[in-house]
Structure formats: structure tokens, C-alpha cells
Image (cartoon, rainbow, N blue to C red):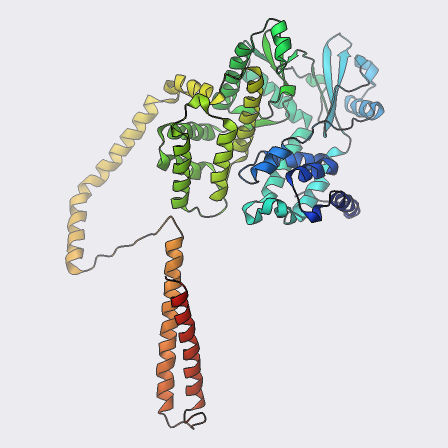
Length: 528
């Protein structure tokens, strides 16, 4: 966990309380009010809100939708501050490297801002400059967020269902990556390599010689904004064709590469010289080979309406905050599949599906892993882009077509044969022992030595009722023991002090009467 300077922390706490007072948080919190608070508190809280907006399994949907509107654009640094940071990174004056460096930024975000420039050799580039001291500011804020994470649970009455410390850690991990531009450079190069075989996709090259942890220099690629349908048509592009290629490429990033753009909004997509240009590789999602395999199996189980397999995959795939009531999970998943069973895949809405899945996960104490939550946000975002570009295209349909077309690639005959052979060998190993084990079981049954162990899983209600019955039985036994002991004391030679009964006997009768009254009340009030 990041450490904080005590004096700086006190000043920051004063600033936080001032913002909370300004928005009158003590009178209640609403989705819009929470977004405004995060915006006023600066880059750490903006990033925190952006991460939260991807977690409908942890936060009510109305909050997620509002937090997704958090503004990326903020007040830019002065030219002197930006130029100074760039010169410190380069180790020389800007004029020694660039023949042109625009004073006005072309974009300004909470962590960095971007300037257009031209190198001495004439190459057009963009220079991304990190705000000085931003990493230290975020580190301090993260430590403060951890300290007050309990107070954050007032949002939406989430209680213990939301582990805000987990979200804070996720946000801090993402922020550390985004504030280290060498990491973004590696991601940009990996993305470009994975998509090098796609003729209609491109992304900017990184100029490593001029880049560092605080300054990133990449080639400048202009183009038409992908949601500017009118301009695309004017330049001779078919929006439907662009939409199909965009959806195909995004599905390929997810299913084949396991390395996908986690923020594919229109500002990060251009069309240039017949190619789709992907920009800003600061936030990328990753799915391991195991995650992709489980994801494919989950989609297949959903299509077949195999509730049992889908529940098992969810339990393997997701993070569990507590033991899961399997009976309730099965019922919820069955209801969810029944709702979509009659719908054609092409008519499904990803936003609705994500919301419904998140609701089931939330009810059952299941949290989606980081990569999956980013995937959900990315799919919903790309669906919004396609809604403007080419409304007839459905990402789910494209994904199912992609998976169907590559089904044979996912099927490994040798691996399946090895599994079948191993299973056969294991069965053959135990088969000779079956007759003797059956004979032994029969002998034990005849002798009355057979024991049966029953494990009750699923709903906790039967177990809770059983616990209550056992508790009442124990109270009844104690009450009976007290009555017997008190009766024995009453006929003993002990001195008689109360109604001709020894004090100890009278006390025993009184306690047994109290226990008997409580037991009778419990039996009348509620059945076991």
C-alpha cells in the first residue's frame, strides 16, 4: 500500500472534506453527485470512478452508467510546464529535437496531455507528456482512499457486498501502468505486432529513442473520426463495411489474442487510407489462455442453455467473496437463460446482457475478474460505436460466427485422445476391484456396520433450520436436567429456606421455568 506524508495528507483531507461539503454529501449521495465529487477531487478519483464504472457486479447500475460519463478532458498544463517536463526527459532543448512543437495541446487528460510536433527529419509525431508530480499525488490519494474505504460503502447502500479496497487496488495498478509511458509503449508495440497481419488495421509506431517513463513520442496518424458517418460517406467509405471490419477485429483481439483495447470509444478510433486506426494503448485488457477457454465454454453453455455447466464455469471463472448458495445460483442462471432463450443472437443487447449477468453475480456474491470487467465495458463501448456507424451489426453475432468458424482450431484431437486414454486406463485400474468391493459392502451391511455420510450443499435455509432445532433440543435437555436436580434437592436433608424447599432447589425450579417459557414461546412463534 502506498505511504503518505502526514502534512500533505492532512491538507489533502481538508480539500476532500471541502469538496464533500460543497456537494452536500451529508444530505445523501446520488449517481450524478458522486460523479461531480470525483471530477472535483482530481485525477485519482476520476480514475477510481472510471474503474468503478466497469464493475456493475459491485456497484448499482445507475452509478456505473453515471460514472462512465466522467470527463477525460481537464485544464491543460501551461506550455512552459509541458515543455520543461519534455526537455527534462529528452535531456536537451526542444529545438534540438523538433523543428515544430505546437504550444496548444491537441488533448489534455488527468494524467497527461498531447502536443503535435515535427522532428528535424520531417516526421510528424505526437508527444504525450505526463503531468509533473502526478504519480506522487495519486499515490497519496490511494493511501487516503484505503483509510476511508469503509465510508465509501454508503454509496447505494452496498454494505459488505462491495470490497472497495479491491477496487482501489485495481485502480492503483491501472494508474501505475498508465503513468509509466514505457509500459504504454510496450503495449502499443504488442498491439501493432498482433494486428500486423490485418490489412485493414493499423496503429501508431512508437519512437523509442525519444520516449521515457514520462514522455511518449509516437508517429502522428490523422484520419476521419469513426463516428463521423457523413464524412466517411463523403470520402467514399461504406460505413457498414467499416463496422463489420471493426467488429471482426475487436472479436479477434478478445478471442484469439487475449489482448484487447479496453477503451474503444470514438475518440480512439480513426479511418485513414482504407484502414481503421487504433489510438491510445494506455488501457489494455488481457485474458489468459485459460480465461479465453473458459469464456468460449461459457458462451457455448449459454447457447445450449446448459445451466449446470454454466454455473460450474462461473464458479471457476469468477472471484467468490463467500460460499455460494448453489441452489439460488442455479435458479438465477436458469431464469436468465430462459429470458434470452427465445431471442435471436442478432437481436441481443450487450448492455442488457451485462446488466443482467452483473445482477446475478451481485445477488450471489460473485465478482468478475479484472480482465472480464474490462471486457464487458469494452464490448458495451464498441456496441455503442457500431450503433452510430452501422446499427445493423451485432457484436454477439459476429463473435458467435467467429467462434463457429474456428471451432476445429480449438479442437485438438491428440489432446482429446490422451484424455480419453487416461480415463480408460484409470477405469481399467479400478475395474478388477469392483467385485471384491461390492462383496465387502454386502458383508458390512449384513453385520450392520454400514455408515452413510451425507453432505448437505446448496441452500443454507435447511441447515439454519436444523441448527435451530438442535439448539432447542439442547435447551430442553438442560431444562429437564434442572427439574430432576431440583426435585432431588427438594427431598434431601438440606435446610429448607423457601416454601419448604432448599435455596438451590428453588433456584433450579425458577431457571427451568424460565427456560420452559422461552422454549414454548419459540415453538409457538415459528415452526422449525
